[in-house]
Length: 230
Image (cartoon, rainbow, N blue to C red):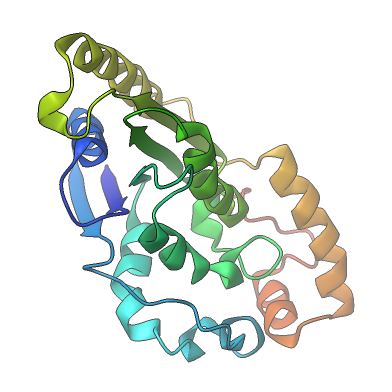
């Protein structure tokens, strides 16, 4: 099993430790990144990725190691502490660079056979909206199985987390790891993904954005082929 972990901050706080705990329980080969250390650029809104190709992004070379790791992984883990009820700016800036990869543009077919986990912590609240920030992108990439882990840990660092809370985290990560390692998972698509794909199947058949339409036609998606069917 190949695992890609992208942490939405540089320091190894509570959210990082939960992500590591889960990765350790899954086993396998882990590639890990920290934002903004490993990628700290902001999308400049040039639209090159949409209209000309993702390789025309001014940050393409810096982004490529993370893109490759995401594509190669069987499981993607995104972690972010809660920052004012949302994910960190670094995580958001990184995800902003993949607008071209959404189902409505040029999705990577490998995504339809992956699993993902979004993880967030806060001293108090905001985990649901923070996890949604990350899960929205993963869902629109086409990933059908996305698990959520969110804890209000009542502490400002991992050392301050109580034994009772740590036991809860252990149980939750045990359950998620067990689900991920289940062998009955097959590539599929969510209802939302299917609806968006169907709409843009027709849009790209007619031709609306040349970069997208050429991509879909080359994949056979404007005809009967589908990325979640082998």
